[in-house]
Image (cartoon, rainbow, N blue to C red; front, side, top):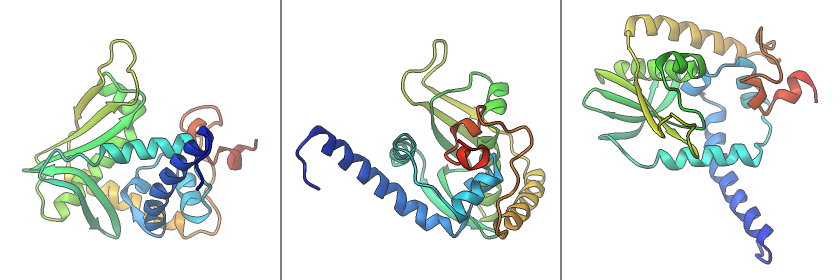
Length: 218
């Protein structure tokens, strides 16, 4: 690409970010990953697997920022790739029975109730990761969600906050099996599932979804 103006520099940067993200996306598209199972909307996952749209620059940058944070190791086993029952995942950090999942977010919860309200899908991800680690002969003594704020945090909120996630492997295993079966049925269909009850175009998570136009019209 010829660099002649500031706009050319911007386009070059976004092009490289898109290429970086695309290689990872294409690799995952024909596989079932843990983040698929923890999505708040099966319909969105169907679109991502069967009929994806390109990402807007804002989404590309969020994914790129997250991937940069994940490059810094904290524990002995970093970016640990595992599989269980046909579901693949990449564990951020694991060592000596400790699991840490890192998240780069714009809003950091202050309490566990806020965590459950706004990030229940992240809790589910950590729980399922604990199950997959256990299934691969790695003991999980404690599991944590670590949040790092994107930009300046709201007043009264810290820029880095960790929460311990309680782990009950037997209970998690039952939910995992049910979730995997449900997603396999959805993804084998030629048509997307219905819009989940209670979802509206201007409320989270639909308000942040690139497929909102397909579901509710422009």
